[in-house]
Length: 125
Image (cartoon, rainbow, N blue to C red; front, side, top):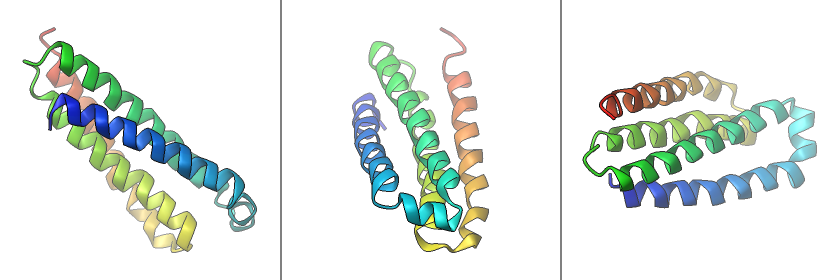
């Protein structure tokens, strides 16, 4: 992982988050409400956005401080966490397969590990 890749991924995840959020808010809103999944969908979008903003900040930090190479680990953990956490919740909302909800905590652990990784990476600033 590089600072450039982190920034590019943040940009892609931001665009994807806007598209998915708009699709859910407009095209799927009534179906999500009927299924009782609107809150789940909004949680997935919210956590995707929180962590893409964090990816963006880490990319900027890494550009300014390229010696902090362990920021790449932070980026990979957050990217994986977004995919697993938000992805499993999106899949749950779109398919109705409730067992997918059991995957979300794994994504949450990856997101938490990313925050710990950031703590470790910047300990000497």
